[in-house]
Length: 308
Ligand SMILES: [Zn+2]
View 1 (cartoon, rainbow, N blue to C red):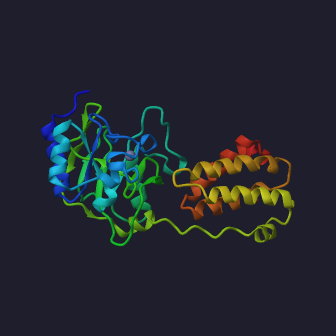
View 2 (cartoon, protein in one colour):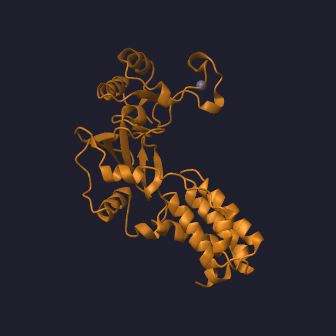
View 3 (cartoon, rainbow, N blue to C red):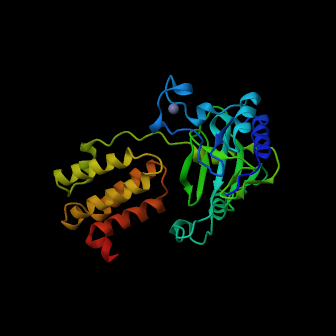
């Protein structure tokens, strides 16, 4: 695929930097960062004192940018965290992605889901902001980050096909060309401040205190000590799951506990209610949790779930 001519990309990098958004090079015609990933780092050159991530390397310096983009037709990455941006990334499904989860039934893409999120929050879709159309037809809505909150990137925690790029992430800047298709500005405006309600949704909840076994036993009056300990072990795994892996953790916990439900050592209602609380305390929606729990129980062979 032919990358865009170098002067256009140099201009794109300089334009982003002029807005105060630190940039770093992406591979020509690609959306992956140029340079080596951390696992291949030889601790030489710029990495002498430890590997430097694209977020750490991103720069506003005209001279550095000019030298870099004159060397090759790099695409432009914007380090959203240092740029003070939160970019809402509304994706469109890839072939084979299937239908959206039940919670988002009827949605065709991330934009539909984002509209539903806004409606459920009783808010208007915030469209009056700098917007880039991605090469596959998705949209990047740029917002300025709230002061005093270092929001992290999220992957799907707001909803199906809705990611956010903030600290720990980056976006492909307008005028970059990936796989022959360009990223284009579709609304040239100043980035609006991130709506406060959206900032609240993106603020991680504090990790819940570990559930004491004694308290859990009191709730599980009919369960054996062994099955209560197993449940607690699974709850701990869920509670320590990382962003992006939490839904899977709930599914696998339900799957692991299905055997005890089948043997009558735990009830489906108890497993469901405990995993639901754990999942929700991590910011998963009730719908997501219930779907994951039910799928895990069915896959694990719990009889009541299979009959439901
Ligand atoms: Zn390195």
